[in-house]
Image 1 (spheres, one colour):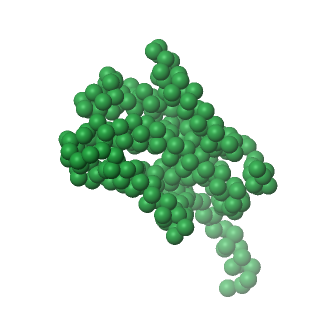
Image 2 (cartoon, one colour; image 1 turned 90 degrees about the vertical axis):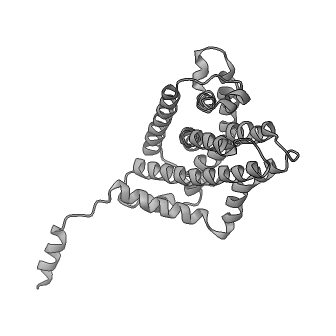
Image 3 (tube, rainbow, N blue to C red; image 1 turned 30 degrees about the vertical axis):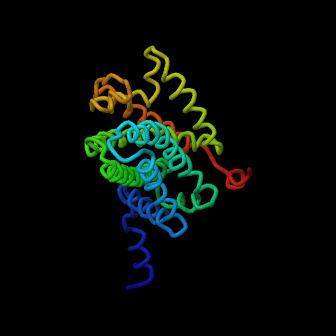
Length: 269
């Protein structure tokens, strides 16, 4: 076969166009490998074990469900979990920008919105795994302390944790793309929207994701008694969380598509 015919056959071949599942698989592989390095493994274990261990030592032997619920619901679900999402999702693209690896990744044949959504879904899966392991550790701590109906308490929290990470992760993603000071902006958002607007006794409090999460948790009576919250319509609460997630992901995809990020600017303090 002549050199010309070989070259012609190569040029006539259909170009390989990677599909979104393939892109997602590649980003997911990079994500979990980066999280399980020896440098980060101790941080992963501390995220899983610190709060459950503290909950175990926080009250005396015996049946003290209220102390356990304060740690599980008030502290972990409503305060720590949003902060975990802020640090995980807010920095998922910023870290790539600061390490100057995003330019290499974006030279691959994929669109910017595909890269962003792949990063979000990969971090969503990883954070869900860490969250599930944390609740499992809480279940062990509660069982050892003799807390009433620990499995149902943790299972109810697990059902709510999935949409919570989904929504808070989408919000944090937009904050991370909007500014390098996303941690500060996230705390401001939390105080203004979640703890401020969320406490206003009118329909405007539906802007706070915390109220929808409480509505879902209150469907289990012991959690309703602990929170002092009336259970709302499950579909309404879920719809609000899903719509919020979708809206913030669309805003983030558009922002990342049209905004150019400079490596030197990202590295400057």
